[in-house]
Length: 403
Ligand code: PLP
Image (cartoon, rainbow, N blue to C red; front, side, top):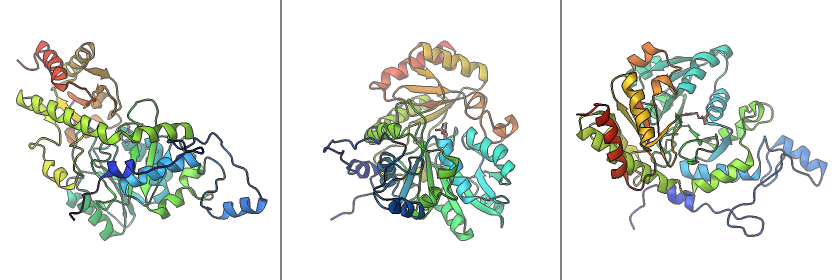
């Protein structure tokens, strides 16, 4: 019998938890605290986790545990924790690993909020970051010092959509005895960082995983030991900084997670169609599904089959004024919304230089190739993408971006 490739969609689909009365969805925990039959059990639970026993919802609750278990199955990690936002997931994971005096080696093409956390906030706690070109493995290796604890990158960089060589980065991290932490927000199910050697995978579930743009949420997938350390009542960042997810939200995200495999496929095929059309009419487009993309071969090698090359693409129209006019017109033409964020049913577009990457100083944006005229698209679930393209093309011709 031939061995089936790893399939996160089927793994999530096979995760079955029933409710109290045989409900097809698990019952939702609507409590911050839990009763104990004896004071001794409470005392025991303060000392170590007891399977099926809950103490207080900032520590754990059954609904959050169900979602965390489904996410661990998706990422093929031993365990997972759910958080109040993607930033909470990133900060909790990093602060669980790093102490004052430690260093992080991070890709310079990361989400602006993460960049600001590393550049501005963590130094106040004595944790510093060296930003590197994550494509340049020699630069990554030589930036690692005795104090380095973490290599940090995004699978697909934001907003330029470069693909990190996770197997090679993992080898570097292992050879130096440090951890590889990967933000997999842009590529859930498509790429499985833990299987490629990452120690920790984080997500902003605000985006594709939830997919309905109605909440902020995050998660951390890692070993049992690491996830357990996050909820340690004396030293766990999740427990003590308190960025836990509300159980009502956890329940609704779990339901949305069950359609993620279908949504990813549709986001990807729509994005590939548009990227090809943009390329055909001579525009500068960044999309890893195009064979002209510098890491197309790498992504093809490391991705799970069946989910495509992702729903994000970036179009460079040269300058801020043209980009603004294009976005205004596309919104009028109902192509999508002028909004930050990603993973929604409708296409979202924004200009990273003036929004999600504005925390990065202009000279650094220029150095990393982030043009002032770059428009980032999160392509929607459009049923008729050829029709959507006709609308976009009309906008491009009206503004004489294409003749
Ligand atoms: N990681 C990436 C790649 C993001 O794009 C974002 C937000 O845009 C975050 C993390 C932060 O997530 P959240 O807004 O859920 O805190």
